[in-house]
Image (cartoon, rainbow, N blue to C red):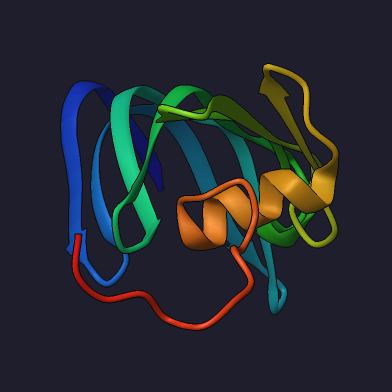
Length: 134
């Protein structure tokens, strides 16, 4: 089967919230009980919200099928999360079954601070008793 989508293929979802436009040129073949895929799926534009309130804009996204089994595909994805405290960039690169994930930020923060910012929306948790009033 050959699927050619020049653009205008939309993926939308609620959990996680997803709004992505794709293009693709993929050939899929089943032979002798094995599956093979070659070609690519690429993001034209899109956003994903893996955690409520943390919307990432997809800067680039590509799945490259190698001609082997679909699970042998490689990923090259970069997404940006804009927060008043920092702009976070997440990169997912390498084999689909075990990609490398790296996080960076402007201004620079260590990975623990970046993870805290993504998880909570804040750079660090504030210790102390709950406050009430102004």
